[in-house]
Length: 310
Length: 310
Image 1 (cartoon, rainbow over the protein chains, first blue to last red):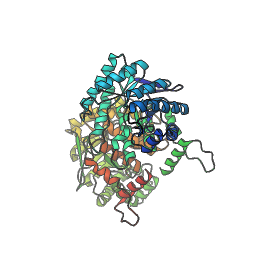
Image 2: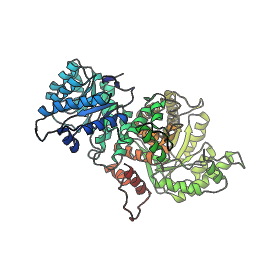
Image 3: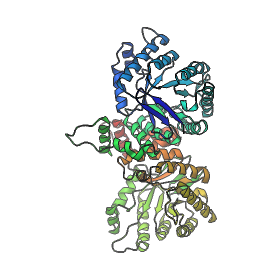
Image 4: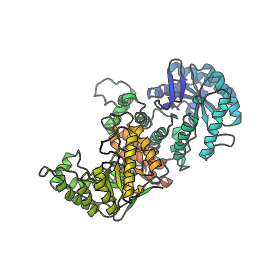
């Protein structure tokens, strides 16, 4: 049974076929969040702090940390991103105890993150690009960490799922040359927007099944990409996640503060027998508290609202 | 590509791997509905009428018709159910134009339904029980209709999915002896409550995949059974349906007036490329009308409410 072990200083999370779905909180990422980017350049970490706490409270298994700000004062991310990555990771691990996922397109920022990150973080990411393979796999080996492998290569992102499968296979094989086992590779088969490619869902479901059965690897994806540009995105995401899980997907980089998606993930855990005795489901769906009762926590509050709707 | 054709007088519905999921409305069924049972015995068809209209308005592809009332005045369903089935079918097909699914455990009621039903209804059901096979398959042949095959036999409902697969296989083979093709068999692999059997979901997903790949048949189920006894049942059902669809399930007997489940089915259609250009998704998720605008229909109203919540 494939198991990818990730750790913080005090907590272990296992990504695996026989485990609850691993929810990697996506919020700490300035890409497309201008306000957060400006804050970070100004040395203001209040949003990072709030996002870290909120995502863990909402049930994130891990948090993704991306410090990819292009500074107005210095457009060279090789200079600015490594120290920012260090600072954000130190802050987040002082606030929450979940394992982290160090996310950057800048190899020096990944290494900076690895230097300060406690435990065994997930590295995000290597691709099938030659330069990237040669830069990242030695880091993966040196720090003995698992890595996200995105299935694009020097020719870009193929619309042909067979090509994406072969890129993933190449990365797994190249990693093996470095002595990195398949269970430390978490493949992202790349999720296209269904609005742009009608077969995007079917492609992912089929790829996840093959990656699991033929390569024995865990899988992840940027889940919300599937619904880009369409109305009622949360309802699409909330159907996509259970479908991907039924096909064998074991983690996703997603927003854990979205109720629809998280409830769908919890239900999928129950339905794949990865919620022993339904304990997590029942906990997340407790009846609402009566007026005047002391509020137990954010999770109880949300579940209560949902039940009254039902 | 397996296609099961069902028809009303004026409408054709296709159950198939490359078709939108077939939603068979379950509401016209007095089982567990005491008030409806009492109404039917008293000759009051107002609830049937309302349920027929509401289910079709909510998007049902077909309607299941079950007239299984045990009369207080006459406890013999062989006498009471056939005329009631006739009456209910005549009424429903005077109100709505979707194809029907004639549902009874009483063979005489099935035949009564077949006599009055226009078009090509789905017959519900045959099982692997010897007596049932011998009573129902000749009817299926005589009326040239498709049939639901429930995978239990004279030994009852097995908890072993392999046994349930073998029962389905036996029914398909026995039907072939009568000249009934596999594409006219819609197998119900039987959905157990996940609260009673933790592997119930995994069993169904695996069975549906095998039934599709090895027997080439369409599949159905009583979807809400999966969540029996658990809190927030609609959220479980709304995750179960997309997971079953991702595994290859092509229809379900369910309540189409439940928004969570229907939205999940619509999203799953989109994600399996069975919603050309996302037209049905976009239609079901139109922005809410402004105050004073004329309401277009029930579907727009529901979608509007959901969007405001999102």
